[in-house]
Length: 418
Image (cartoon, rainbow, N blue to C red; front, side, top):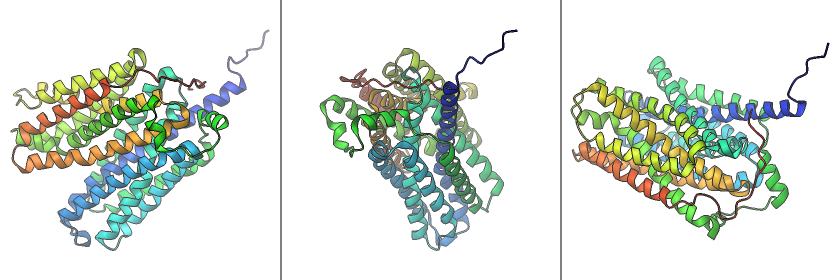
């Protein structure tokens, strides 16, 4: 008898194993970020009700803002470091940093210390997503990089759902939420230390270019400047929409005349649509092109956001429009990241992605602030949705300016994913 042999060589099996660990660990890291960025919103009502540390609504707003500022700084700062020192060590270090300061949050003795701990935790947290997206993209062939980005970002929404469900269980014992996140982060970092491989694209780029410092001015060179400006504007507008809708959708719906249970349910429908859109958007972008798909996604977002400004008598129609809004708005933002991972060479990819994420985070601060001002002025509906529609138009125009490919593309031999 002829012995049965495996169709996979040991080298192929080893590569598949490394790719599998990269996919799993990067996805879990993004899930932790989704958990963290929702946890503060979940506990603010409890903190204010119990007057924890004498905290006021203004203090809670300051803490939430500083958390996002820390995330923005971390995202911008990590890019050049990851392109110089490597993806693996930067990701592990970032996870350890935010895990440590997350565990310390319940021990804060004052509102000021609470805010400082959240700010520092945000620095580590902001670094995680750009590096995770970079590693995922570099472990995929170029033909599947859009899916690498969108599938990774489903972890974010999974983390947000876990936080919401856990918050319902712990009620006033909010400290548990931070201890769970911190301990989980340390466990993930330990597994990453032993199982997460360095990106082969980074190793090859380092061998070719050395470990010289990668300045942000590299992004301003003629080959990248046009793309950079379009990416920054699109990322800013995309995250403005994501955070503005997640923060104010229930209130806008309630102002439109929908009962509170219906208004709150729409937030869940919105995020379910977001998960579906991420999976579907990545698949379409890899087949039809990232730029064209992103344009289409922003375009449909304009239509859906405009439709939400109109009061709908049918709950089924309302659910459909909100679902489609989440499906296209949330994945449009992530497709911008997918464009970055596909457009820039490995030598500056993490720097470019960090800059896109960092500038986008400014939009995540601006969006809720402007929408909140409209709500305070009593014109949240319909003007909040008009505002969002205009933002989506600006995102569409920004993507329209993007070149379809780099002028001097640098080929990379990326091993197929598991």
